[in-house]
View (cartoon, rainbow, N blue to C red):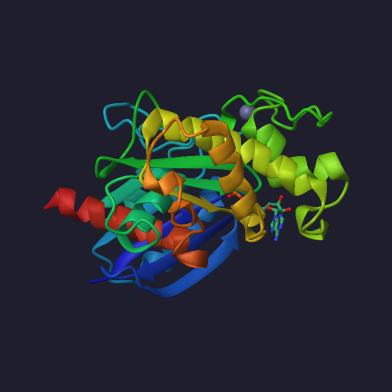
Length: 293
Ligand SMILES: Nc1ncnc2c1ncn2[C@@H]1O[C@H](COP(=O)(O)OP(=O)(O)OP(=O)(O)O)[C@@H](O)[C@H]1O
Ligand SMILES: [Zn+2]
């Protein structure tokens, strides 16, 4: 069974084909341009592919409320041409299979719960720390939707005592994304994250912010696993620093083996590696197919 997958990112779109085992069989990638041009490329890629369903994990914010007249649109992005653009309706006109639609991070959480680092668990959270910070939430066996969708990249943070940087988020300044995404690291230290040595103080500060957000997530949602992806998390030495911050913040109040001897298996990198996005979208496509049957 072939399932189509679209990873709709703000800088690039990745389209691919996979199967019900989460194996990626083909992929192409192109830069995100005006929506008409980019979606024409998506449609062109799938037009001769015998897919039974399609999943789209999109950059956001997006409308995922099926009862809304603007369901399937990107909502308030500053990206030229994309604000309020009806991505899903436009693709539906051209692609006649069930289509699953969710945020890129919700898709990644579903993919990790289906085939990756949270396989077999009925809850997990997926954080991406990249150009932005995004959070996907899978709880009690399904993706969390609410009034809109989780926006955990913009939670407010307590400032590190030695941090004088103002913050990069255009909305909130010093929210999590404003303090911890890749562009904030670059603005604070004057070089890109991958140029900073592993023992640079930047990483303790980075872990301080990520650890705060995760501590709040543990208290609020009690996810059974937390997966940290995105470009910044390629710095593997951040994982032990983040785990330490979480334990220091919680101070033994939440009693769980996952926060003690099991913490190395609790806060983890994506199990699906570079396929996390596409696999997530395949899982969304499979979900849409099940719902349509
Ligand atoms: N090895 C690395 N170490 C530290 N920072 C990195 C590394 N690789 C990428 N980054 C930073 O991560 C950011 C890019 O993130 P990513 O590679 O996840 O791309 P993206 O898909 O554009 O991000 P997003 O998921 O927010 O859309 C840049 O700010 C970059 O400086
Ligand atoms: Zn913000």
